[in-house]
Amino acid sequence: MIQILAAVAALLFLAGCGAALSAPAGGHDPTFLAVIDGVEVHVDPGVDTAGLAEEVGRAIQRSLAYWSATPEAIAGVRLYVRAEGINCGHPWLSTGCTFPEKRIEIMPVPDPPCRTLLLCHELGHIILPNDGMHTDPRWADTYSVNGC
Image (cartoon, rainbow, N blue to C red; front, top):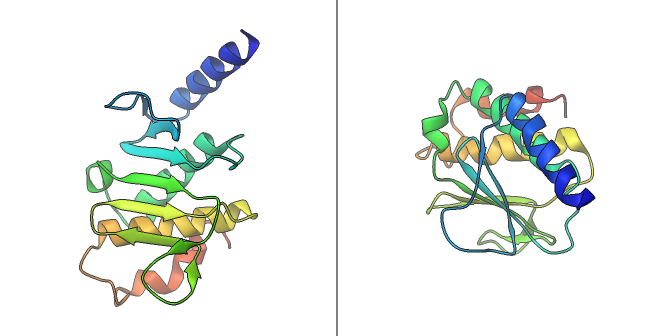
């Protein structure tokens, strides 16, 4: 019962901080965490979820500001926080990748500013879908989003 109350309190706190949360559209999904500002967030088993929803909410807001985008630009994105490296189509594993169907996969790297940077970069691929070669000058300065 205490865990349920704590979860409800956390959701109310998040809602008051500008992050819009809602329930998933489909049935029960054990990897589902929350819908935050239109982004459906899923987490692999074994990934620490303490504070993750709040962190993702802040990263989304910073990313939208950085890319001068509206929440509609990322509506329908599915974010998966993976426990291991991500296969992004090259011989090495990545810490983040964006797929054509508006799916983003990231690893929970240990440093919070770097996690914000990682999500900002991947959301940039959603917001600028035709710039896979990073020609927009803002790609060179994404570290300024959170000082990473």
